[in-house]
Length: 459
Image (tube, rainbow, N blue to C red; front, side, top):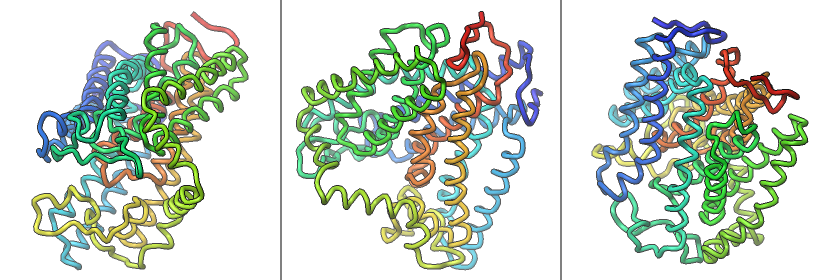
């Protein structure tokens, strides 16, 4: 058994330990691919088959069981903390079933959304050494291209086009209000999932630009250039404000990382990326003018500003001001539509669309507020971890960490993580684990060592 120390993974691994770590990483990468492809299966291959909603859970469960069997757990006291949190949520759900006659099936599926994806946070980092981080980044650089092409085609295709079908097998895809342009979803089955992917994809690509060539996940500059351009154009033409906001956040994180390194070569390289940005905006306009104009209209005008301001206020402090006080809440899972499929209990449409408010409504004031505050704390902790991962010495430094943190933190703190947990929680927790893994393996022996913070490169 490869039992890992609480603070840091072993400085030297045996061949057996490295094999176990790589197998675990492969299982997690398979689950990531299922997250990216789940919507495609539901929209274009098996429309209307709701059970595919959980397709990524099978490789995730295999990864959990393998990690526990081999003792590959990273996190120390965090493991105990997440275990205690899971017990608390389960007790709350049990009390609701007993005391307010909450539907058992709804409670179980609700607990699944709250709890099942938490182990990613302390099992995935145990295999995220430099080699496997690069495997993950390289995989995403290749995936960025077809995903972006699909999204761009969706933005220029009519709503009735096959490529814009929904998971119900119909043509009721979302359009930009007041315009005919369809909001892109890529291979996902909902616009929000694609928007979060846009921010993550840009952050990973920007992190590669901040690496010296010999330290990148892929040595192919054409691949990196094509991947970055495709994601940027797809984000701009997506018709989603969230996608553009998260994309801008990743660029801001990249600039912050550059300023922190005080490396003039990196500053010039990142300035070159920003220099071509107006050209990419122009390409997005030429490709999909209707979508571009529609997106622009969603950012401009007094009505748009008022709507965005109100939404931000509700999402940040609404959990404290909006829900009625209740110790037990209205029932965990009541605001999750998937929890009511085939159930006699109807989906409660009176619960808020906003995650933090809905959590308090479902779980009661005490437990719900605790969960929301923990998410705020997790966001702050991720920012700190991102800066720490950037500042690691030699080849352990991970410049992707800061743009990743900048784009993930808004969703982690106030975004819709629980309601569509199979996709969003997996995306967000993978990024958290990627950053944390670089810290866990900060003393891993490396053959090639290069850091944007170091004045010299060590071979």
